[in-house]
Image 1 (cartoon, helix red, strand yellow):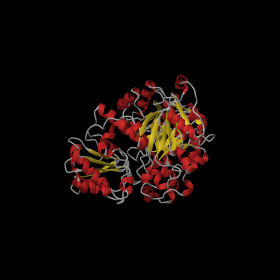
Image 2: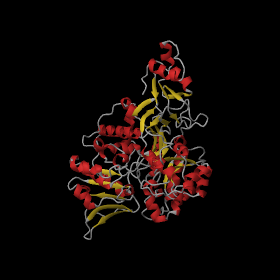
Image 3: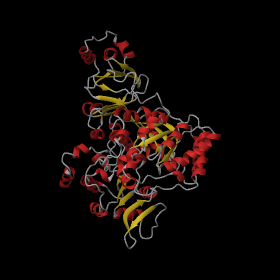
Image 4: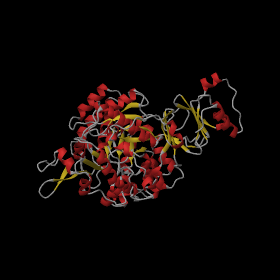
Length: 612
């Protein structure tokens, strides 16, 4: 890192055979950029200027992108000149579907198994956390992993969990298919022989009717969410701290923006007070465009009448703004993506209920996004959209389908004709093995058909659908898009259906901006766009395919402001208070786990913890 001094800048210019400008200090301070990047691989994603030598940033935007000989002399006494030392710079990553608001409220309470590659290591983490978690708190592992990422290729047994935690409640959510609860957790949630199975869910029982601790979504995940909601919550100040830590871990992975897709048990406006407070205080380090997700079955119309009457589409600013409705518009249209069970058939009331909500949204010019895993659901929803469009033109509303794993070419054509888009996520990286088991390898070859969408010119972008059904690590999504493999290593996508690395990167940067109606504002390194970027710890374009999922950022900047620094840039990292409470798993383990740390000595972490 070059210090922002005239001497340092003069050294950089000398390497180019140039002299430092003799401008007066006052003039230089008035007109000089705040930051200059040079001496690295700069990927702009601007086809007219793809690989400049240097970039200048002024007042939170890119102010110059071009030759170092032209940009370096503009440095003033207060300009931070960053010598990239050959590192790769990319536009900041933008997640098209991340439950970031809900995730932030709970992050400090959750033990993350994201990235852990050994069940032995995962269980060692659990034991260590159990030892420091005070009553009445739970130990929660809430999604972000799959059994297939473990070398053992299995989940822990209930006996193993009970042995690790005989007294502390433990709740382990695996994707959207099941949850594992130890005996202590069963006691505190009150499940016993008399507890009935909820609609769409199952409490597995022993022969005498006693719950075993296994909860199954069949296929409705409501039983999993409802059980998790019985646990303690953090107080407001702790939720502020928790959200800041989650955002910082996203920054560590190069994320500078996200579209929040609402979520189950995330109520508006109550559960938005924390993120609103951070926005008002200027403490957001990820730009968030949020969608409103209905919370009340059979009362969805009333929700959207109330919200469209009290809130305005795009209200807010470049850091926090309303992005429309969804991903849940009506509960009758939600086809949960548990590939371990048969595809659910949507009930007959789906169409009239969906039509009523869509009419409200079009009338108020609110875009929407609709969760739809299967082509059959998409087809029925399109029938509704086409019908309404004949009477109330959708026009240029940026409406989308989320997920769309099995969407057909015919329905992609219908989506394109109506001006819609498709937001895909890396759920198949976590559930691909289950999809193949149920539908066969042939069916998984283009699930979802991302390459076909691009070929057809359909608006499409990528994200994670974190934090429960998959991990929030965007590099796993880029790994999946470019290699066609799951986190367990299974190839599910044929090579001709995978993407080259530049195209995949565009899917998580510039292409996301259509989905938040921010085209031309961010997503590229171009003069005038918001100065959001990441400096990578390794070159995304040259590392072996399997290592793409291991990339992190050493310097992340949002709006020209450093929000994360590591390695040579660690001293630039803004201060972050310790995770609260003091028993938080984040204090011991952080967030996404570095699989490289444990890879050289499989199980070494587990052995080390056992000796503690």
